[in-house]
Image (cartoon, rainbow, N blue to C red; front, side, top):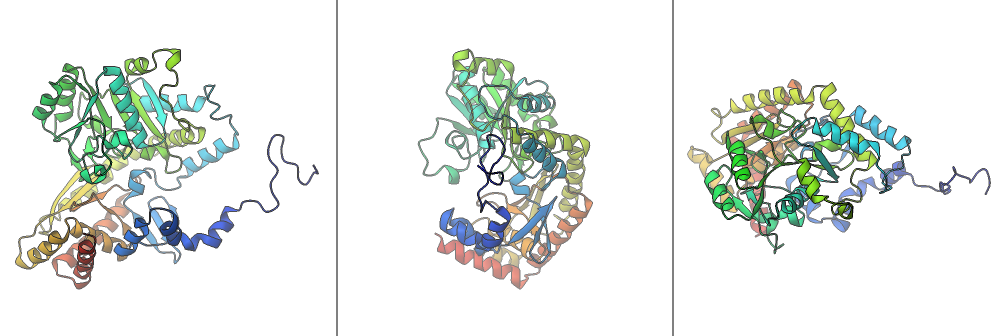
Length: 475
């Protein structure tokens, strides 16, 4: 081995050619949509082409993307809530550079590294009634962990969930998913039971059967942005504990400051879930991380002896990069008062949008908390608009909301999403760092799109007819 080829002790020498990510992207980045069509989910590029979302974004920072022409796009989607502190936050970037440069002896499987303990300690400070944390890699894993722990701790098989809930797409979390479109074709699932959100009588009827391990609930449902009624979570908790069942709060999307408190269940006094699921924004947008927080007795029942030390584990759980990202995110939240900003900016955005409901007959409701906002559309009263609305509804429910999302991107360079299949609701879950400038930009753009829709604007309704044809062709 010569001085030119030798690497550091124990490390492989670099090859003559080497791997160059920058060169690879420069050479083949333009193939992005073709590569997806050939090798990944082929329906994704097809869908993006159909609705005009087939953009080429070159870079991103904070709450914005830029294309190759230097035009900026406002991100009101935050990667489905993952980018809570914005894209490429410098504190999170530095933490990841630092942890890579430290060359830690990570994932040895038979030692106790400091970063998982430090992140668990910090997370639990936001939920002082809870005692322990399990780290996985995603929101659905956090839910799967809670389901397993609840079943084992109670010795019961059944978990209750709400109609229209979304808790993930792996088999266990799919079993408590309240949307049939996700469940269809994947049976048999676990023997779990749906109850209507807010219906305490239905909850108590199921609990009376004596086989319920837990009730899992999103304090604010992601699909449609529906909040549990005031007092419901606390009353449900009392019912569950009376029947020796557990309350699981799914805070995968609502947690880490999204709704103006660190956890959404904290909006209601006296609510102390037995298990809490966290993910998305905890990652900083870089390294996937999921966390299940729980009470000491539950963890001690699951891990009841040294023989059961690995009865529930994850190969990449608690890896150093994920833990560093999580610690950096929580530091940013505190140092930059991000949660208070989410509350303040969310109130401003929601108030300004709600003021438009009296101006536009297609706009029926604006709801939510913090920077998790639902904008719902509904049947208009005037004859001309009613006929256009009926055309869309006959083809497929949810097309009008898509008609609004498309020009927001194409004409105003604002990325949003329809809140769920067959829903006339747009959901706003932007980075928690946005401020008044972004509120002004969104409200101005949304007002322009609504003016176009109510004025019978040709381009908007022409796009609607295109969506109708596509919907009919897909039947």
